[in-house]
Amino acid sequence: MEFWKIAAPAFTAIGAWLLNERSKRNWERWQIKKDACLKALNLANAVLSNYEYQHVKKGDISPQYENIENARSCFNELACTCDGPDVINALKKIMFDNPSPDSIVDLRNAVRQELKFSKKTIDSDREKAFVGKINCEKKDGT
Image 1 (cartoon, one colour):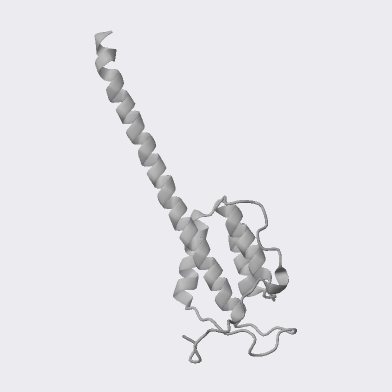
Image 2 (cartoon, helix red, strand yellow):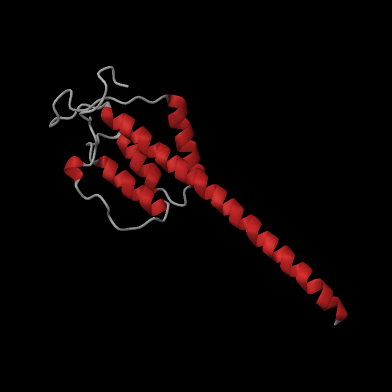
């Protein structure tokens, strides 16, 4: 009986420490996943901004650029941290199919679900979903 009086607090402390370590690892994993998902959205913006679209006048979309190293890194991070294939599949559709600018909505929704933010659609306006250019951009593009 005396042993358990002394040992119980130690076991409780060890259990709390283990739970805390697990929680920290989950938080760190979630942070990597979140960063990868946001990188995927930025990569998709760059890709979408460099396509030509049938119903979009030339010059209505300012191009954004990205490099292959960042693209590969993004895919690797998504593949290693996402619980499902939806984010990667939506990004691949943008990068390798013949997408329209509103494809960004599908990627945003996949990211929201992957990060467990909500299944509710926030931006359903597919016509104005992609920001092609802004009227306050510097003339040199910076």
